[in-house]
Image (cartoon, rainbow, N blue to C red; front, side, top):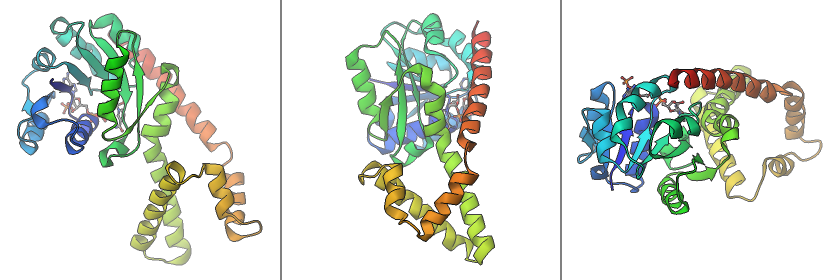
Length: 272
Ligand SMILES: NC(=O)c1ccc[n+]([C@@H]2O[C@H](COP(=O)([O-])OP(=O)(O)OC[C@H]3O[C@@H](n4cnc5c(N)ncnc54)[C@H](OP(=O)(O)O)[C@@H]3O)[C@@H](O)[C@H]2O)c1
């Protein structure tokens, strides 16, 4: 069974690397194309056996599962190219949030899945958000998820929550890295601690916090309670954070959702 990738930019190549490094797929099972051919060719050099295809149609013709790892504006071109070379037995997997499952079901004969990976998948960690069209069987869904489970935790969500789940799991690494950067910069400014020392402490702390919250039996509330003894230093810090950060994430989600609505409208009109 061959797996195709149309678009080997940031996310396409992360997905390919993750699938190979986790042992989920052999390079020989992968066929990849990219508008700038050198990107797919580079992957073929890195992973002997992986086939860099000359055209998207070559990918569509050869593969049972086709990952569409392109930006929304490119969907019309790619779909127009491949639609007559795909069949009802194939699965097309989009990784692009504003392109709706029904857009793809209307335009391709394939079974349609939408998965939103996270950059955390590169280190065999983090979630993959999964949404499915009506044409996939339960068995096919299980097979796809067992592949994704080799490098991530697949989590099924309803398509109406595409944006918020993407904000949390795909944008989240950038949002929390931003908070961490401010945390480190303030530590350096306020105390003169060497930046590299503050950075390693903060990053190891975040890794451990993630483990406590996923496998360590804590949730965000119980972890704060455990660390912050009443009247202690952490409790003082948390009080300030509650006051100063109040509402920031509500505003952030409103901004991402407004942008998403624009992107969905653009994607819909570009596909019509
Ligand atoms: N970045 C993330 O963390 C993340 C997470 C989840 C989902 N996503 C979604 O994944 C999608 C891709 O994002 P990205 O960050 O990987 O973007 P990217 O780095 O720009 O990659 C897109 C790739 O698609 C290629 N491409 C464009 N048109 C093509 C065509 N007609 N045929 C074949 N290849 C074509 C581009 O080729 P060129 O080399 O010629 O530009 C580029 O390599 C986006 O919709 C994004 O929302 C991203």
